[in-house]
Image (tube, rainbow, N blue to C red; front, side, top):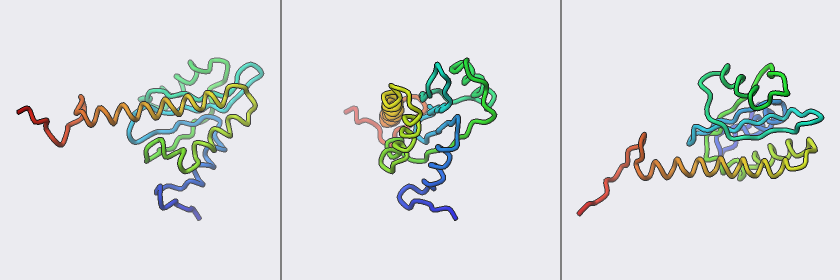
Length: 150
């Protein structure tokens, strides 16, 4: 039985399970087209990766881009993904962000917590920039109110 959190409208326990199970994970957001790419694989020389990336046109493109970003690793068998339907800041509010960061930090690489913090700050800023563009009626958006040019 799945438990959907009433405040978020999504199954937070299932998202935690996906985070725990995925070697490679892509998180899609509602407001920005940018994605969060998480690669929990490590080697003797390389730690986990968390990075804000552009949307891929296809699964094949995502696999190719991952190979470019992580050339020392084999292409994974699969990349798990989920859509976060709220503001990305709400991932912190409900504990999902902390869960993700703890998983990566537990892999034991110095600097991982800082990389997680930087990725979160970047995706929050990306979302903020889209919201500002929408308010201003930038290309791709239409404002509901016209400015009074009296």
